[in-house]
Length: 473
Image (cartoon, rainbow, N blue to C red; front, side, top):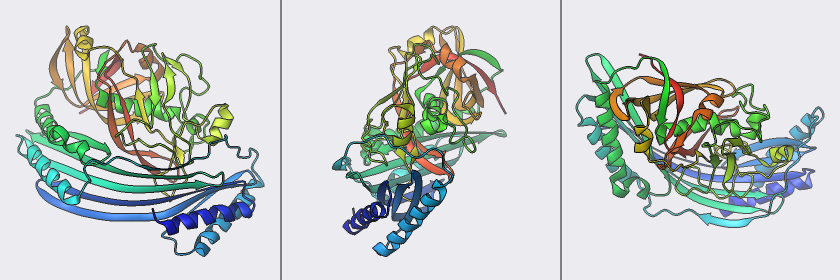
């Protein structure tokens, strides 16, 4: 972390407080990103970019204001922006009825270096990318193979007027892959994302990424012979990858307290369980949590972007809604502690309440036993595209492929399958959770206005419930 930038951030805090702000914090972020896109054995692009700057939040007259600056050269530049934010707060405070009140937070002074066992290099990522691209391309019926390895190195410094000074240094390594098959006028694609917070070890240990490349290519090829499904309401067993997106969309987003309060209604909607804390919203098999401390997840961090130390937060326990994800402001409203979920895409944006690693809790069922009990149903595999109403109540999520279950055995492979449900009805129907808990990387969650894209983890085990399945050609 650049000591000159740290000094500018510290001075900005002091100037804001001396100028009448009740609270101020600053985030310095330095990021370097390198990526390569390989399609059908050829490099489409190699990109390298970096970004450095300061984002400053402050409260004056009970009203928030925010500003940011890229590559500041002097304190005068920063001071001018802070003065503008102070004026903005004073102006908008005149008509503001509810003044900002923050939940108390501990003072933390700490530096954290996240472990990287094998440092990523672009040349090594390209080598891995070409290898995976060839694995996909060499599979029969494959007409397009896309592999996009990338990594970022990040350094974040948080400081506030209460005395906290927090540095977190971390690296993310990710590979996105798509296999597209075509024959006799039919096209099918399978994609997957692998990686997490750490070094190259996250994708190269036990040939993980090569195995994933082989699996998606084979499945895309097999889907050419798959059948569509006739619409019916039936028992479904969803695998952990599909459960990750279900959890993200129908359990994670409605758990964000700002959404529950209706602060996102205009552009992102509300929450189907508003006002239901302490009430039953699913079967006793349903347990949901958010946990930023899960190591190697893309949502792993120790302090959020307002300096709150992270911990596991129980959201749903045995089907009972227990809590929401809270920042220091909403925690005051709900009379509970903040949960460490305030994050911004980078220094250019004001932090929002975001998922870190929201998951359905592990169960004790062997997945083979879950399948064996089903007379007529479907095994739903791997996330694709969600479609959800404004309150996340009615939902449909397409899967990458499904398989018919008949008399406890997996039979036909099925394509173009969508799963449809009503949130409380589906979650009440869950009667089994597997012991195969898995966290998946999510790299493109959007929220806010202006829109902020965020990386995180989501996960869970295989789960069994009742939903409608249909194919859309």
